[in-house]
Amino acid sequence: MMKEAQKMVTVEVNGKQELVSIKIDPEVINRDEAQMLEDLVLAACNEALRKSRDLVQQEMGKLTGGLKIPGLGL
Image 1 (cartoon, rainbow, N blue to C red):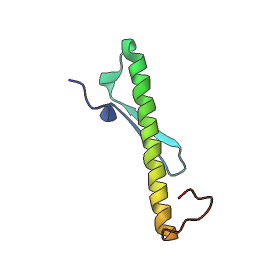
Image 2 (cartoon, rainbow, N blue to C red):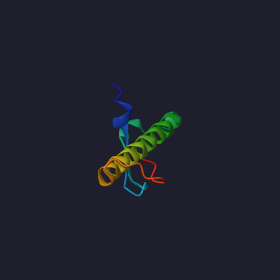
Image 3 (tube, rainbow, N blue to C red):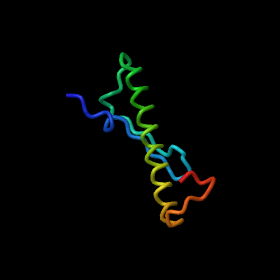
Image 4 (cartoon, one colour):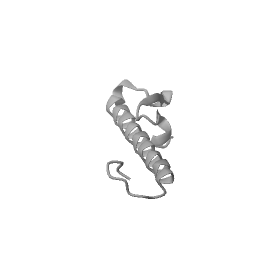
């Protein structure tokens, strides 16, 4: 039974947009499926970065009281 893609490869990103950890479920490590693993890692990295950007935007919005400050991309 195949697990959800998000549970097979997980990536953690810090507030500086740096990858701090990558965890790969041993069940998905198979030489014959290297391309699939690469795709899963790429998708997990992009999802972690998206979540990090969303969190930064959310926290900055709290600090600025919702004001649109040029250059902050809020």
